[in-house]
Image 1 (cartoon, rainbow, N blue to C red):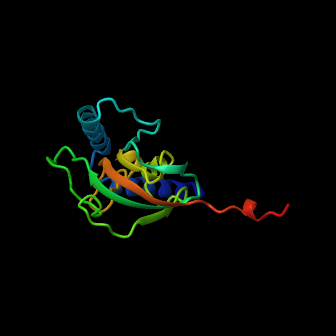
Image 2 (image 1 turned 180 degrees about the horizontal axis):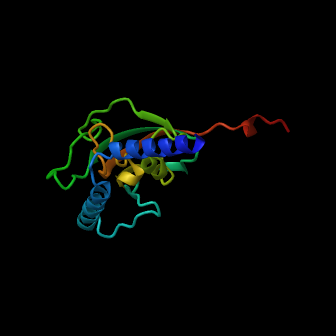
Image 3 (image 1 turned 90 degrees about the horizontal axis):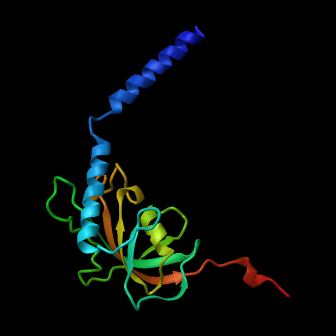
Length: 179
């Protein structure tokens, strides 16, 4: 009986797995994304080098001051986002927070290391300081992957322009010690 139940569970698991296969070739989509990303970098930033994770970041010269952002710091930033087109698209999706079009909304706030933002943005902050303006190119592996998010589709590279408005350092108990 135990052996029969095990076989039934394996069969049900296999049926569920194949039923969830939506017929989309995710590997092909990922390869198309990487080809589009390579073309974009070759055309727009030909001398750029990615970090070991694949992130491209371009800090504007002369921006930023103070200490580099650290794990646990609270960051307030203005940002704008777009995505590189998929193979079916012909133009960039122009979606933005309004920062680049001259509008200043409330800054976006997050704690570095809390996992509340995409991995590419999280990584990029360690190369920035308060006042830094940066352009980021974040492939889907560091962004929204095969699921996408909102107007960012599956396997789409995210382009971001960010300005670190304020950094609130992580408070430590070391400051409260008596000598």
